[in-house]
Length: 274
Ligand code: 13P
Ligand code: ZN
Image (cartoon, rainbow, N blue to C red; front, top):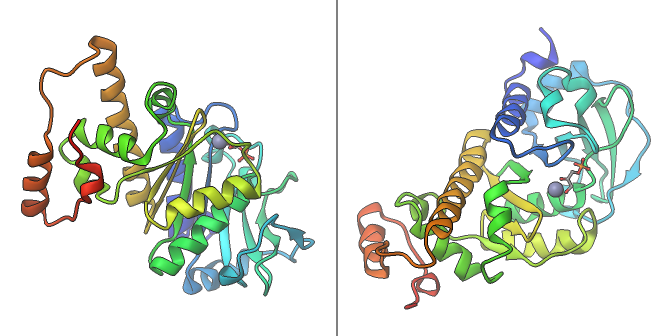
């Protein structure tokens, strides 16, 4: 038995490799974090080493105090995670204030958790408030979604509506819609605050000219959400490349009918007349 046999560790590694195979992780692009369950902490405890030094997170997440996370390393390549997870990822513990972290496993050749740790942890905190079941935060450099941030207005309602229109199952998969953050310097507290504000309302936040954050209960749901949004963006890029106008589409009335049959609530703010 090795830590690599533990189910959540396998799920973490598989998501990294799936994302790499989708082409969303050039070089060290993207990062992933998982908020561990108490029983999972106990399961891996025999494999943890003496704690490293306490280091500043760069923001404060008091409601995540003393929690454990598996996280990708800064500068690490998603394509290498499956080959050498102990080099590319780590397990960290937060202190009793939620202001510092220390490494308990992984990053055996040195390094630190992702530079987007403030965004990941602030998103986890918001999602945990909403629902204890949220455990995964995933950031990827999704090509088509990024492309759209150059041609669509950077408004939540426009991105939500345009993405919903591109595939009938979209409003069922992300009925709350998607949020958009205008261009900001990545890696810091400001973009973390802006993103976590959007995560109060949505499970998806798009970073203009950069990528996407998705959140979910488990690896399947979170990867599936990222995949669905990005596929919809790909269809929109193709449609816009063929023609500046659509001959037909899914209408606001169609969405309202879908909402009834699929038992989802679709906010009228996204069903505006164009
Ligand atoms: P890290 O290598 O620090 O995770 O950064 C990659 C990235 O995508 C930054 O937004
Ligand atoms: Zn990024």
